Amino acid sequence: MMSYLQRIGRSLMLPVAVLPVAALLMGIGYWIDPNGWGAGSPVAAFLIKAGGSILDNLGILFAVGVSLGMSKDRDGASALSGLVGFLVVTTLLSTGSVAMLQGIDEAEVNAAFGKINNAFIGIFSGAVAAAMYNRFSHVQLPAALAFFSGKRLAPIMTAVAMLVASAILFFVWPVVYTGLVSFGEAISGLGAIGAGLYGFFNRLLIPIGLHHALNSVFWFDVAGINDIGNFWSGEGEKGVTGMYQAGFFPVMMFGLPAAALAMVHTAKTKKRKMVASLMLAGGFAAFLTGVTEPIEFAFMFVAPVLYVTHAVLTGLSLFIASTFGWTAGFGFSAGFIDFFLSSRLPLANLPYMLLVQGLVFAVIYYFVFRFMITKFNLMTPGREEDTEEKTAGEAIAAQSGKSKFAAMAATIYEALGGDENVTSLTNCVTRLRVEVKDMDAVDQQKIKSTGVHGINIVGKNNIQVVVGTQVQFVADEIEKLRK
Image (cartoon, rainbow, N blue to C red; front, side, top):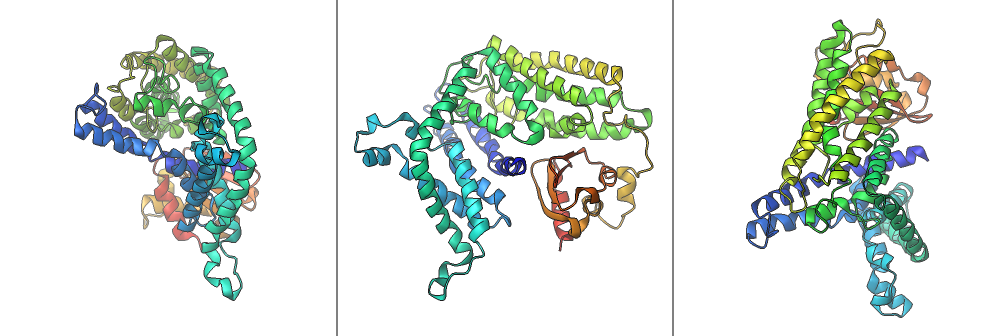
């Protein structure tokens, strides 16, 4: 079950990666016309509507992305199946269709059906579509129906499956929706404390990749909060809308880079240069784009107490920002690019105070991390015991006939057990996600010798190798090695 949920989390990264485009378009549009929201400028209106076309259709994006990511060979037919599944359920359970089925006026239909076009239904449709594709994409029908065999059968079976799912959701969805709304209202009803609790649990769920599920409740229109959509569209309350986003900026732009600096300063002298290069890249990614996994995975498992402290500080940051009503938003993550683009939006409230808060949090992160690392002798990068394993540079140099990524890929794949042991290999933004037959056949020390950020064992047959933001190049090289 855990492996399945992690695959969904990985698949969500494809559609989520589209959000920066919406942020860019809408940010520039609001920058041109911050008061009229496009009413005073055709160019601004064009850009804002273009960005809105993405944010308003997240359900479709998630259905296609999850179906594609969860399918066994990532074929385009699986993506089509996801779209078919989403269209079936959202059409059958739309307000108009439900009113017709129940023989009542649309005004009397349960409000839940007015929200059927959402991220949760998109994820559900994509998961069902992927299951249908994996099951039926190689089925051969009798000669008379041969045209519909194989991959063509997948979207057909998805439509059939979603007919059944729609019948079930007709009764279940109003109950589920009410529960989600109650959960969201319970947290949002706590105001700043609720924002702090959300920030805390958001970080704690990252190791198992389930933070996306929590995010969907608060960031998207699953339970009526829709913090991202409302903030960028200007529909909300100034100083309140954006409270589930703003507090991440001080942490991602300042706190974690400062933590990275603390880990550099506490590393052993002879390893400090290597750790500095690693942390510099991670810190730059965190500050500019809000991608924090390269830093977080560097200490998440080697020093869990440090990671829990990080989660507490993240919750504290969201609590402080919410308390004072400082708001900014993001389309992808809380980095400088999104901060710059969102700072002129109508609902941005004293956004530059988040930079002041960020400077304070940089100091807090640096001294807290440095104190805990030295006080408890935590094995953060550069502090581990010396081994006879080759360094990343030596591992690459040993294969001088290959590019850096080809050399890393060859060493990592060999350490994973090669074709005899690896059954599945995919990647998300920063990690290789691998399924193996025998975990004992994996040489973790050899993998670490390539200079990866970390290794995460997430199940009996599942391992994650945290490469960093250049993981795609390593994954591509490994695919060339696989038979």
